[in-house]
Image (cartoon, rainbow over all chains, first blue to last red; front, side):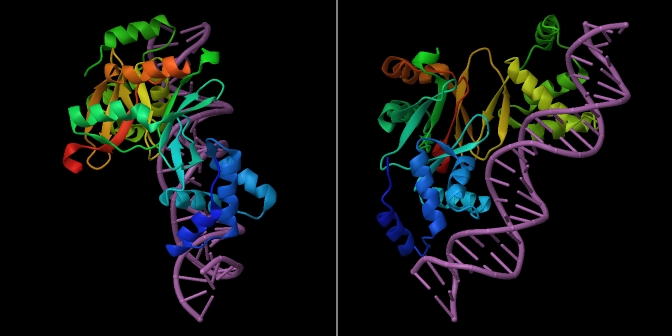
Length: 140
Length: 140
DNA sequence: ATGGATGCAAAAGTTTTGCAAAGAA
DNA sequence: TTCTTTGCAAAACTTTTGCATCCAT
């Protein structure tokens, strides 16, 4: 998956935000590292290019991108937050707790569950990026 | 929901663990506070009875009970961990992000999803206590 | 030039841990 | 008595924040 920086940059500038080299680097890192990435991994990655780039900046940028729906954040059971480029359509994950294998799951697959939640409880699930942890075929 | 301390105590002793007043108090607190409880809330609760009881002890006891499958832990989006007495049968939650309303959801309701995960991906979901966040009927 | 973003460092918030003392079995 | 658990305090870990400076627009 990749991101179109031109388009994103235009949108951010239009909203009064600024497109800085730091933000671009950080978004590139999220993209290139792929899958679920920790803030720590992003920090280490961008620091190889610009050693002066600060951890606080990484967190602020990641939170900013989350607010702007450019990336999504997921809390893992271990307490850390992982980030991922937000695709055009929401999706979810099956993540193997043993080997880390990561299967992307379409929103459609959860629809029956969400539909039942709405019908039986009047409850609207508002999570657009759920990770289900378990074991993959190889690790069972 | 309640817990049978006699039974739990016997099992723990049988496994070589010790049943201390602190552990009993902490388990009572999880039970009486009901629903999803933070370690902080447990700490405050037990401290009213035994002011010298330490925070570290609370965390150690809660982790211990999790290991023993006597309570379950859930990471919230805000980063805190909430605990709950583990029922005899696993269940899940719909939690309203606005008012905190908490609907218990049977394992059965998630079974079709888990079944598809197994069939289509060979993936075995191993979460026995998932919280889905969203909005309840009243808060929509 | 203007005000949003960064760097730096300190702090906040939650959870863990080393160690000596206490206490359950 | 033995070995687990507690209390205490310090630390670990992730994330946030105040403020002066910098820089994208």
